[in-house]
Figure 1 (tube, one colour):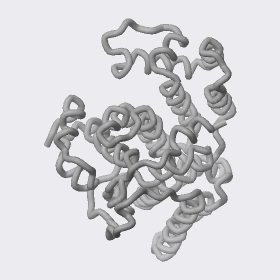
Figure 2 (tube, helix red, strand yellow):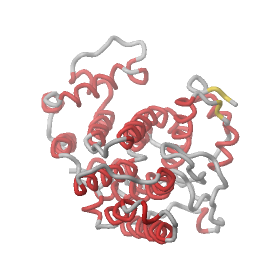
Figure 3 (spheres, rainbow, N blue to C red):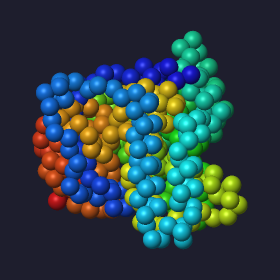
Length: 347
């Protein structure tokens, strides 16, 4: 079912330097001292993939640390839902990460079937209104549709954006199907995360060539880069159903938990859905804390695209030189200014 995504994402890239800042907000990271590993000779050579077990172990390690620290907190007894959420997130992958919705899996299978003619592909995808909307929006958007006549047919949209672009739209629909209702303020947070992921996609596609990444691959993975946060909110939703009441979590603790967990949980989800180690590692390391001397073009792209989206959303001045230095990105920031100049206000 996911063979085309595995083939698309599971490519051993030339690898990138990187690093990141710790988050001080639930919705986005702010700069702090980057936690770099010391480069070694072998780290400078090529990217080595991490398997699913690595990301499960990393998730377990973070959960153990969160549990230990919380149990020492004097406020622990006042917030019993914290430990129950940690328990929810500590199960096997098939329990932590829901399988994609059936309709989304069917659409993915259709795209994966090379024997299906374009006309039949268009007919099958036309049966899902959300896919029709997504395909037409992409085909008529600034990237594909600038200066061209509007498209109102699904088959014409597929012709314009290509099979890879069509697959990316289907992938976005899959992610959309994961949105749950954790309740109260968490719904607002969830919607903000989803909006951020959707808005990061086009920026990732725009800047991908700068780092030697495939633009459509970058677009698709940018739509998933914070999927670990969706997994966490889904577990909050599950806990809400089990307890038959709203889940109550200290905002500061939740911010810390999301910041520390969303990368490894996102990588676990990527492996669960068969996207391959290249995609999983990019999602699991898009804040670039480990092995900064190694090149991973897709992770570099996500690093810059995410920060660009935050700056555009907040209408903040964008410190190109500072971001390049923080991420230890290859090349220099001059080309970044050229690519992103019309989207961002330079500091």
